[in-house]
Length: 471
Image 1 (cartoon, rainbow, N blue to C red):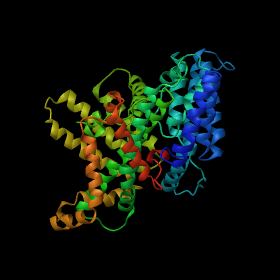
Image 2 (tube, one colour):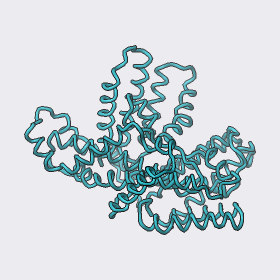
Image 3 (cartoon, helix red, strand yellow):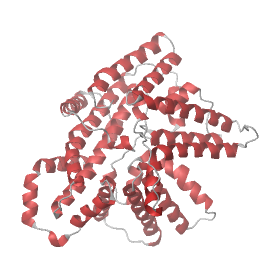
Image 4 (cartoon, helix red, strand yellow):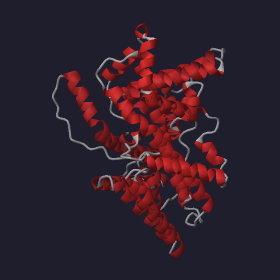
């Protein structure tokens, strides 16, 4: 059940919304909260009910471990620190088994010449997201930064359907406290108007822009014929536009859905393609992942080094970015993507500390955007061979031909219009989140939401799934 599917928009969402607030007004918020948990579990099970026991066991295990950690209680003479280590390792091993086992065995077979058998493992949806959320809960419980949440509230924090499948990576302190608010079960018409507004914008971004480029990008990256210079760069820019509008469109829809239920889901994007450095890009792109890695990966690595130095900080940055790359999937393209960004972010910090010269804004933006586009080419490709094919055309300047480029542009003019529209929206001074923050319920916002929703539904014809569903 996708956010932009008919069954979600016209059946699941209105039924869940009406039933939740009806139960809240007629019974108690505890009952309505339990219903919302059941609806979220149904939403998750709709994909594959075989994954339901896994997420339930994960919730119970981490909730129980968190309670022991927050109370600094021993389990059979096992210290809280050992409990934390074992619990975090259990989550990582679960992630490793489902997501990385076959990748590890494939590479081990290649290096050692062995022939270990691969397993037929289906990746549970949202595993990377809810695993990171619960690791954060465990660490914070050990640090005594958590409250005594009820099991229902904790389970709802993990499974709340707007952020369950593809994030953002929410933090227990931010979300559970909202579910515990006294008036969370009362209809708020202002939140409904805001929610529908940002949901409609996200729907438009996903179906009209991102999905319009999906087939074009897939054919370009999966092809085997040699590419011309213009084609390779068009595919690269199309992939860059597509992934942003796909993921930020999803994030907008998640924020909108949360608001319908009076829950504020954190912002995950803040115009990342306007960044003037790669470090700035990561402060704007997948913000919740960057925050998680900074707090639970980068800072512990830096502390483990002992005394601070720029070299140690740059090393910690590089390791953290490789982990970000690997988090996205079991593929060398993701690892290389993370490593490339690790080098770039580390270099940004070195430049800021050691070199006083500051590039003009336009030059800084252009260099950053081209770097990000090139790196997303790595990210999008299925393997490093496909990366090599794309790069050999993108950086083969001797093969550039004006006539050939113009002929190619005439063939793909529709896609160029979508790419141009996407860039126009990206560079427009006010992004969707800023529009939401300045939202006023009036004729203009109603028309904008209606147009975006209508176009989104009109172009929602067998739309591909969200890219981040596979991560």
